[in-house]
Length: 243
Length: 322
Image (cartoon, chains in turn red, yellow):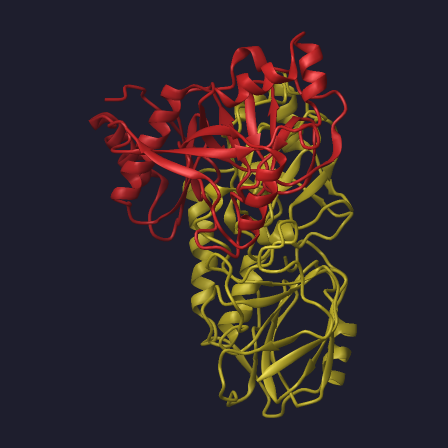
């Protein structure tokens, strides 16, 4: 049983936030996921949608169908009964990444800053196991925790005007999978041929919140081949079910 | 039945009830900036409140009837139906407000992306805006019967826009809280569908401007590092890392959306119970449409008549309409 007693607060008159803590922590996140699963299994009347983030679950509701009082009671009852660890299997994804200097703009600088080699930076990144904590900013942009401490790096003092879509980045203590081109102060390590978001494809989104992400180094040639398959709508990442 | 957009610009979009169920994937819900006027326009034609309708922003648009067609036009200034004869042109420019809504019988036909026809410019989901020359088809095929209708009165806007404090109310100290609720904030020209940027004093954040990113609700007042609040609106992001000391109640979002650039607004905290009462009151008003609408004679007004009416409308005043 997950033991954190949450704080429930109003977010305007059409949403409630259930906060399990104030830091990025897998146990706190497990609570968020467990509550989300409990609410999705038995949705209370008036619940519109759920947005999980690192340490809180945002519950959007319809005030014409329920009230904050009723919903708060419902959540408190669930939490008091004890939330079970999110049931069954999780998904572990193997995401191909080309770390070649053509895509990994910041690898050399990072290696210098850490006084190590590019190979070592790459090794540390692809041997790590990441948790997908949340998506935000743009469709499918995935925020990952679990970056090894040796790779923790403050964001760039001068953000890049444009980082291409599909970039794999790191910043602070997190890693990020980008799905759209955007300006960014994160450090670019490589590029993935996987389109984790594709509105023309069913499913449009590949990953789920809480999924485990591992990166798999590939060559430039592999990258081109997989990119061509992605263009046809294929999901070019392997997935395994893990307990 | 159909309408062609003769003149358009990025402020002209199709909006329905919004893209629901995908915020966890970073997809903004979008939907109308003024959900109330949008619903009124739809109700005037007997449509569902959330049916896809045209949102015409400050730059205006011109529409042309490609067939005989009755449309409904709603804004805080007036709400009515208009029957256009095939070939008629109708210029539509919001006056005294930012957005007006044009509903078609049965809603605007179109393909859905993730369950919605709402257009979100930044991501391009649903399209970014309505293109000049684009043809809009009504879902209904039958011509409307009976007289055109107008609403004799629209609810008055509140003097102060109501918010519920939190979720990061404690990120303000007493001084910045007093400023938040005591300032006449000015709507900046940099405002758009993502949010109203407010000009006024910088709010100090004694705990800093960083929070562990969490979810955002429409109407959230976000205070970034520079201390200048942003009122997040329809095309907002779904999550964010800046403190949100308060969130505007749904009943007052339409008023905020319709404040012209340069006008001022004031926030005032209220309880959730009061917020829900205000929302139910607006919903009750919607349920009276089209029953309580007044007939406008037996003859469809021409676009010349409508242009004349637009000239008669007075200057915008927050006390009178929205």
